[in-house]
Image 1 (cartoon, rainbow over the protein chains, first blue to last red):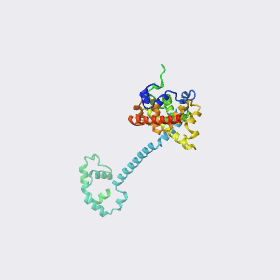
Image 2 (cartoon, each protein chain N blue to C red; image 1 turned 120 degrees about the vertical axis):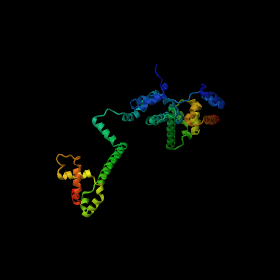
Image 3 (cartoon, rainbow over the protein chains, first blue to last red; image 1 turned 90 degrees about the horizontal axis):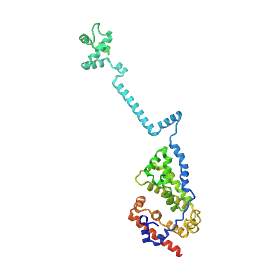
Amino acid sequence: MKNKNGLKDELRAISPLLSRLKEGKEGYQVPNDYFKSLPDEVWQKVAPEQAEAVEPTYSRQSRLTTFLQNFFRPKYALALASVALLLVAGFYFMNNENAATLPPAVALEEISDEALDTYINDNIEDFDEALLEEQLAGKIGGPLPGLDLENSEGYYDEIIDELDIEDIEDLL
Amino acid sequence: MKTLHSDIADEQILDLLLRDANAERGFRLLMEKYQERLYWQVRRMVHGHDDANDVVQNCFIKVYRSIHNFEGKSKLYTWLYRIATNEAITFINKKKKKMAAPLDDGENSLSNRLQADPYFDGDEIQSRLKEAISLLPEKQQQVFNLRYFDEMNYADMSEMLGTTKGGLKASFHHAVKKVEVYMRQSVDG
């Protein structure tokens, strides 16, 4: 026995009997070429798993199938569902916001003339003159010949001054 | 000059193993480098060649399946040794449950089983020694086998078994004394 890692000295000190026994052979045997054939034997058992792990050359159809399978894998499906949900929610809120800012068509008809008069009188300062001018131009078929919108401002101011409540209601 | 498998670095083996296209080469290198050490470690625990063969094969299959879980915090052999030891202990416990009579009882004693084993050619003293070791507590068996048969130093054993060097020295000392007492009794008896 070599004194590898001080074992010989240690054993001699603790147990001379075991130190002597260590000189003999251990007694265990293995079949001939056992260690030569063992890797093959074990590899045959893991090879099918390996074949699954290695990606073979796929046909177009199987690539599509794989893509779809991946597409519906939980981590991707969840991400796609989240994106879709955000898009739908965004679209809904955008439309809802527009809907909230636009007066409903039926609501105007339901407002009484008296209420309308009161509203216009109270808010006439806030009316957009440019918008009124456009509306008026539409009514009379466009600005007067030879005048563009910018130059016809004075002309429209005069017309607006002459307008009464009923005319404005008609325009709206 | 032909490269010995034991000269190939663990990092190289792991690198091959983790790349699917080279996994077979990596796996074969891993086996060729460590199969004998692991086999003898397992054989000293389960004793019969057929049992050791089953345990070692299962061990390497598990290693292959879980190689991605090896974090490199310990040496590769330490990781392999732990898997093999756990596999052997599980095997022994299952075998004990299946056997109607205890494994160390009368005709079923380890000494008798070894003498009937075609892959054991030791004398009676050697089979008595194996029996004495098998009666040690599990941890002491591991310490005894690593030190007595593998002649491993205490620093490596400490990493492998997660015990201090002082604790291992004391454990080996106790184990040797128990084995010696058993051997003297069996010779005198």
